[in-house]
Each structure stands twice: as structure tokens, then as C-alpha cells.
Image (cartoon, rainbow, N blue to C red; front, top):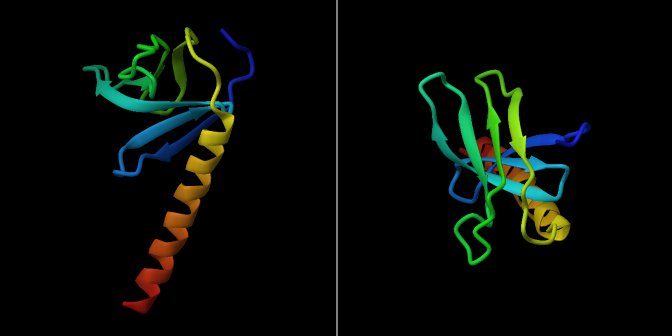
Length: 100
């Protein structure tokens, strides 16, 4: 497991929770356990890669487990674009709210 994990909590285009690790890998919310911990799977999980990486966060957003088993290249550019899009959407929502 990596010692220095930089976590950014974001959202997908559809508004679901998304975790970005070290600005290189994206993880989408998968399910919540009975103990309120949340499981996030790599966005490449449902592709041909079938990536097995996952991250588990407790209800305080602390990392309980991080399995970095990526079987694909990092997508730092895609992640950066995704983060920029999210920030832009948030600003547009604020502007739109001011006009109402």
C-alpha cells in the first residue's frame, strides 16, 4: 500500500460520488456496507480491463483499505479534465442560482 495517498472526493457527470487517488486513478461508488463504510471501484472495473483495484472509506472518509491492483496505465490527463469539469459545473451552478 502506498504511504502518501492523496484523496479528492468529487462527483461523476451524473452526480454520484467519485474518489480520485493521487490525480491518477478514479474510483466510482459501488456500494455501502452495514457498518456505513463505502466501497469504491476503479472506473476501469466494468471495461475490458476488469481492474480489481478498490478503496474502502469509513463514514468519516478515512481510508480503511486501498488495494492498488491496477492492470492498466494511469490516466492523469483524463483525471485532470474530469476535475476541471467538476469545478466548472459547480461555478456554473452558483452563477445560475444567482440569476434565479
